[in-house]
Length: 258
View 1 (cartoon, helix red, strand yellow):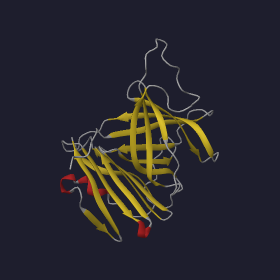
View 2: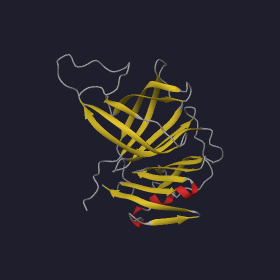
View 3: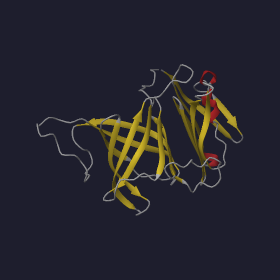
View 4: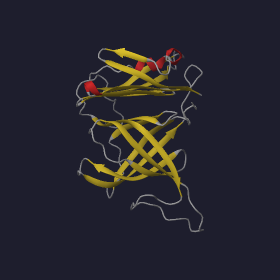
């Protein structure tokens, strides 16, 4: 059996969204972690700039959207979607390379029957990406074109190594699906059981005073257990192993270092 194809894992932070024809704004803290095999967790939490994120669990009204799934990308020579913000073609007649990306939702905090999610990606300056697409807007309850502005980062090593780890839960009997993902110094997790949703976001931070690092929880919504700490000791995690917590069995889907 051949080894699964891998690519460099990614970290993307959204800097703004615009539903056409509205102005650009950012009402959330949105972070997407994508593993070496294109598995991702996308967590969007309502917040005010400069204020701490909710971190004590409890009701999840502040969760704008939590998604886990798989992405796939194809380079195209012209926009694949009709969009009012599509940039004009090059005046010199040359072809442009646009990355068209589709996001398949395996877990979706808003619905059990998610619709299509896809967009054209246009690289900007300084690791910024402009995403142009069309999707369901819950405010207008209709399909609507959008722009999203993303900042893309490379993972940083923790204790001298960078890791991409994915641990999944798939339990139809309990209507439960979950995913924990770590990319470098970031970790995110989502668990949906019936209509209940819990999410967490963590980051490895180094103290300037002590010079030592530790994993710190940055956000938590919902009250269900998420086994995020498994990713903090990657040398002990074996791909294919199953780990049981209460009624749920989590399977290690990916362990990759680079």
